[in-house]
Figure 1 (cartoon, one colour):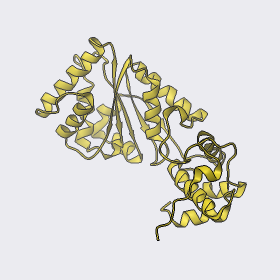
Figure 2 (tube, rainbow, N blue to C red):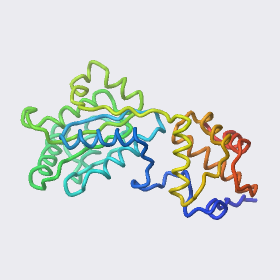
Figure 3 (cartoon, one colour):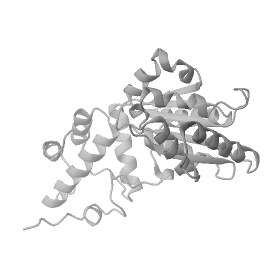
Figure 4 (cartoon, helix red, strand yellow):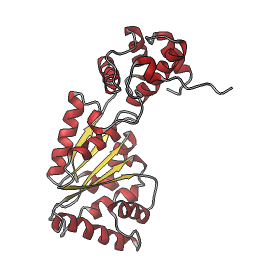
Length: 272
């Protein structure tokens, strides 16, 4: 018999499901340090320079890119988002061409020229600054990372046109520190480094997600919140999974509050 999915919304008096990936940009959690990173990235882009976001997996780097895109007015910026995979130089240029709305055909040099021409037209004819957001950039091949130097080289490197924001985990930092990509590293005017949440930040984040879902109070007792932190060590994505699963178990049992036993039960059914 198929087990019926518990209705967390009605059980906990919520308007939407908590701790899921479906959250609007305006409802993203923005503690002071997160807002500082966002403001510094936005200022770097406004100056038509490039940046990087370094963060362990599950700590909010993609959310930060979404927030950055949302903070840049569409009338003045053309943001193109690419989720990186292990592609060749030509195929990466084709991916970028696709998201910019141009024909992804031609040799590598031809594609670079085509992209540069398109980005120049954004800045010139349309008066909109082009911004390229490359997520999961740790998966870029070494030779592919070097194309960013080509894409950002305008008029013999004397004109700032395209801003590139790389986002990735520790592997991206190791990649950027390699001698072969020093020319790319030197083009990064700012690096934002995200970290895991503290114990207090974990509670604040959980309270925020419940509030966004329409709840008034966090349905976890004090020890349960501590257990979530101890299990996840403040990893946002892991907190989401554990908290959501624990609330599901509470709903099944008819409990109004999540206690430590339910958090531990959630842990047993997850890879965290």
